Image 1 (cartoon, rainbow, N blue to C red):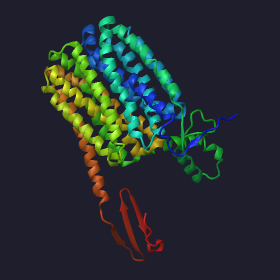
Image 2 (cartoon, rainbow, N blue to C red):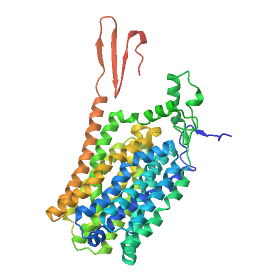
Image 3 (cartoon, helix red, strand yellow):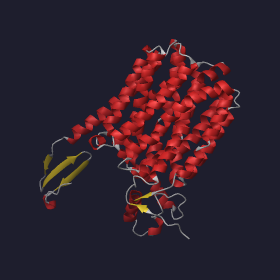
Image 4 (cartoon, rainbow, N blue to C red):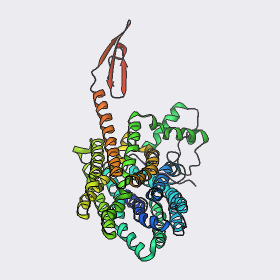
Amino acid sequence: MTKKTILHTAPPDGGWGWMIVVGCFLVTVCTRAVTRCISIFFVEFQVYFGQDYSRTAWIHSIVDCSTMLCAPLGSYVSNHVSCQMGIMLGGLLASTGLILSSFATSLEYLYLTLGVLTGLGFALCYSPAIAMVGKYFDKRKALAYGIAMSGSGIGTFILAPVVQLLIEQFSWRGALLILGGFVANLCVCGALMRPINIKEDFAHYSLKQEHNPNESNQSIIPSSKCSPLGQDCTHKSLCYCSQKEYNFLLKSNFIVLAISFLFLAYGCSPPFVYLVPYALSVGVNHQQAAFLMSILGVVDIVGNITFGWLTDRRFLKKHRYTCYLIAVALDGLSCLFLPILRCFELLVPFSVTFGYFDGAYVALIPVVTGDVVGTSNLSSALGVVFFLHAIPYLVSPPISGWLVDTTGNYTAAFLLSGFSMIFCALLLAFAKLVKSLKHKQPARTVPTSDTKQEIWTNGDVTCAATDECNHKEV
């Protein structure tokens, strides 16, 4: 007996979609918020194992790197097996990694358990959950993503002081053990991710049918694009599906966006890793330093939701790309002022500013990516996007730690972080300017010996017409 599949002509923009938003919200709490709170263990690890800044920073780097480096694996499992299965498996791996980390006897042990194993678990959960929101929402996509991604900020706001309290009460080992149990809730989140079939997903198979009319329809129309556990997906159609899933890699818009992510990922990581150690170095006590992370987290929520709501309005919906690069630039600018803020009262405004614009651009990353590649390719594209974050996430905290060890202060580390994010925004602005100038190019007329040929240029699409087509416009 076959299961009946309901095909939606467009995302429902509600209904079970709000449960998907709740599930994605909890996934970001258990992944990104927990990753941010690992910086609170920074000083504890450094003192306990007697290591310098750069070696200790590798723990946070490997977690982030593993999460992003394995993001394509998470997308693959989601597309070809099941989003629910992938998130549940990821929750089990992440929870196991944190529990094993509580028994660590060296930094190298933490590199493997807290870094690789936990990061791999987060990778299987993060990008599939985000992609599911994009499949359920269209008109209110930015708002839905703003709510879902605010889990990172809310989680940071709540977990930062809780983790500090757990460390004081149960030591860092007990805190990691409790976090391991908390992260196991990712398995519950996975159960909420009900699959949906969108008409756009079938476009690839319709195109294949046109090129291969002799093949049976049953071999090319599974229950969804390379459907989860699809029994009718033959070897040829599976290869075709895999090829179409990544055809966006050749788009010039995506290439520019991908390059910008390298600089963005390098710049955004050090402030989260070194804000607490920097605050402690200028005389802020432990509770106030942890509270700075809480402030950053709660303002991050405001940035997620308000920016998501604003960019869904009609007057800003066409300018999401510009709003995104402005948020990135202002986040980088705030980092440039951080070295001169040397007391708790001055660090609070930094947490507010950096947290708000961090939440703003994070909420727009999947939206901007979806606008470039389309909804049907969003899961695969997010896997590539987060994969591009891997190397910068891996090297930026150790490089910043080396700068701190070499210079004796945090100035160079924070300046490099800020300039990297500003360069990301400038690169996107330059690409947008070039594209605008290209669109404004006037029509050109190219005469030939036999017929008069007119060429209209509209962005990336060029149409050649002769007298025989009666100058039909594209």
